[in-house]
Image (tube, rainbow, N blue to C red; front, side, top):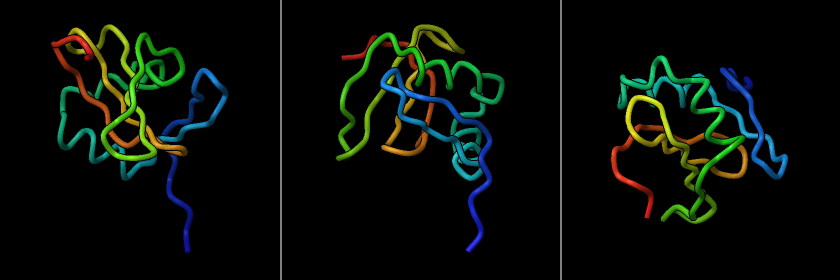
Length: 93
């Protein structure tokens, strides 16, 4: 079995590595084309979030950072990888 292609790596504030695979990046850009120029903001959101909360899916977390193409950047991660990322105008809960 081949290893997934890694586009980028970052770490949470606790030091847990989180990777963004090529497959996940393609899915993010397909669903949210405005994100194509915001890879660095996605990584900063994971490494230096302004706000965090549990996701509705068990084992996942939502990380928020001010900025990006809208008012906030939201990145959903699990224990090992970035799941999705998108911009949002409303404040986190």
